[in-house]
Every structure is written in C-alpha cells, then in structure tokens.
Image: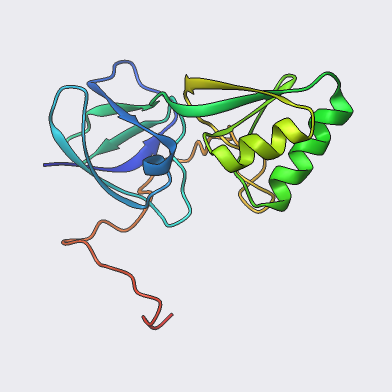
Length: 169
C-alpha cells in the first residue's frame, strides 16, 4: 500500500488524484483509494487539513494531487453585506465551519442551520460543491494557506497508533 506523508510545493507530473470530502481531508490518519483504485495510507500531523490542489508524496516519490470532492452544501447569500455578516456571526456563534467567498458563505448541509439562516433573511441554496472552510483564528490564517515546506507531515508509524484521551501527553 502506498503511504503518503510529505507535502510538496510543486511537481512536474502527478501520478493520480486523491478525491476526498472535507471531513476526510481533516483526518490525521486515513486509509483511502486513489482515482486509479490503488489503496493509500495518509499520515499527517494532528490538526493538518489537506486542501484542494495539495501535492503529497511518499517513499516511492510518486506525486498525488488532493482534490476536494463535491459534497452537499448550502450557499448562503444576502441582500447586503450587513445581513451576510449577521449570518456569519450566528454561524460562528454555533461553531459552524464556513467557507467565505466573494459575497457568499458556504456551509455543510444542515436543515436546522438552513432554517436559522432563512429566518435571518438569507437566501440558502443547496449545492453539490467542494467545501473549503476557513481554518479558523488559530489555524494559521486564511483557509487556503499552503505550507510550502518539504518534509514529513508526521512521524511515519510502523503501524497505526490509536490515540485515546487517557494517553499520557
């Protein structure tokens, strides 16, 4: 099985694509399949989020491009910037991950949030779209930041370790 553990800034060619929804792109240990059908293991440092277009490699030096899979989302728009800002505030108050676009917000599909947003006067449209939320105040800034350092993203384990809250720090 191919093991991917190093993010690289650029490559002349790409061997395959790893198409994943956001939920899987934020996991630090992952077993998945490339678009070619080959199984891969991905090992990243806890807290790492793989973004659409990131390039990963492993021991065999093949380069794999991460692709954000389309998933059920809501595109939120408002009549003016103030109303959209109110929606962003209320989503943040509920610790909801949101993608910030030019004149819109995008969130994962959630009927309760949709009702709240329409109650605030927003237009909420269901879309099947790639989800790239902001990384948050403590996540290194804007959600599309790319670390251009080379090197392993995490220690490469001989076997996967399961982390439990009771583990010593």
